[in-house]
Image 1 (tube, rainbow, N blue to C red):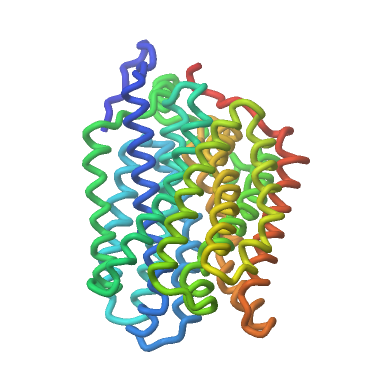
Image 2 (cartoon, helix red, strand yellow):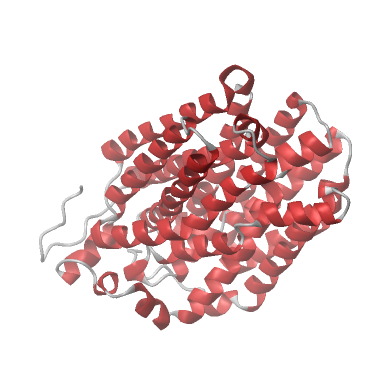
Length: 419
């Protein structure tokens, strides 16, 4: 652990090299975390056949993972506010990698689902801790671009999982899970090159030990900031319906089972729209430095809405791909602003907890996205296209409305960070 500076000394400065290492480490952690999550979604039918169960039963796996993420955001976030961002970030990486490995050897469906529930705890912890460490370390004028780059780790993990999916015939789903568990090696990079947040060190030095807000009960702290807290949770619920509604069932259920596209075509489409998603996060993240976080979020979400018919109703691989590329550029573009926006909204003393809990409580609300879309599709004769459009369209509209009407009221500079 990085040592705490003695009382009376100035908080440690951070070089641009330190900032780059932290961005790289947190991007890598979120990328590998997301990759491990999406491996399940790419192998849903294979896992179902292995356990001799239905596809709907296996859909419980990603749902349970999403449900348990707020627990991890709270537990790991509170630990990071008390004991530092760096050691807790390392703990989350080791935890989710170990659970991924154990998932490959699950003897039955019950154990597999239990492990995916636990995986969600580690998954929920990584994002909040990593974003707080990044935003508290990088120079202020880097935050928009760093936010877009950090959140681009999510589609990058999706891309990595899709490329690993090419190895499915040779390795089987268990082999992919074992390969995914190798992500734990990234903790070595964190141990060697990442330093503790200068903001956390300074606040701990000023408090003498653990900052006061980190010692207070979380509910008492949230009551003091109930306006921003309620707003953040509602916004993140809409964001998670937006993202999961456009991705979770799209490659395996929609493209493979409904559009009957061949394996290489699916892979090409997924790779193309994932690269577009990464580009969207970077572009809109940088734009947020010029026009503001809330305006950028509203713009990206609004631009996605007219693209829904092209994305969901096209029947040829070319136009499906074009629609997917354009809509993911906008969806993940809006997401690219989220790390900076939530950290700027957060009370300084609980910055590792607040963004992660808000994000993962939104995930909890949206945890049944895949099941909801499946039920809507069954009610419409089994066609998933209307279900995709309804869920993603409603979520995008809600994001644009929330960001436009309520966002600027709560938007603030990153209090407590050195400028």
